[in-house]
Image 1 (cartoon, helix red, strand yellow):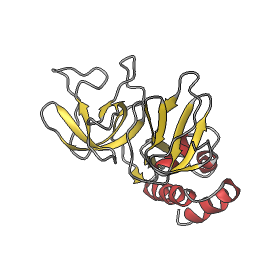
Image 2: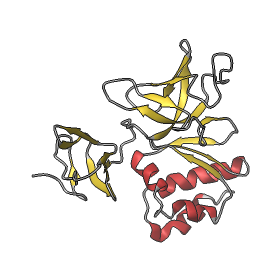
Image 3: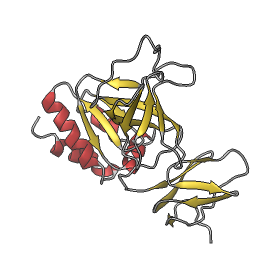
Length: 228
């Protein structure tokens, strides 16, 4: 029996999704011969009109084409960079995948740098490929993040929750802090407050909010930021 939206699925379960038009499969789902299978355990979710994924608390990221992720440069073989994005394979980032880059004008990237980019190839049969430009060749906010802050690794489902327009966590945080944040769909989050202590308070608050609902957000954030 096929699982419906809201059902718990296990790897190999068939997912019942609307394929009458364009159907987009997010993390945890894969199609074969017009049948959609779950690849990870979790809750089958839908974001209308036609985006489906499996909501799982796993921290291991399964790359999907189009995802915007954070990663750390681990090596610089040849003209490419190897980037850890929390997946089972390191992502490949070419030096030409930056706005304005060329053979004579390469980006200044070092091992250990934090980058924000988009998965251009996410097939599990190949190494994931990362780019820091959009379809028009512009950076679109992607690239190296080099102005301090703190990077934390949380669950993939929590990151997607924060990116949802209906979620209240970031709005509630903005009532207490002034901050910058970049959220990767791989569960990696970069945050920066006005100073080091406020950045640490923000980090504590984000971690504390992962396992809560919207009814007690203010109290949890206040408790987490007590040492400001």
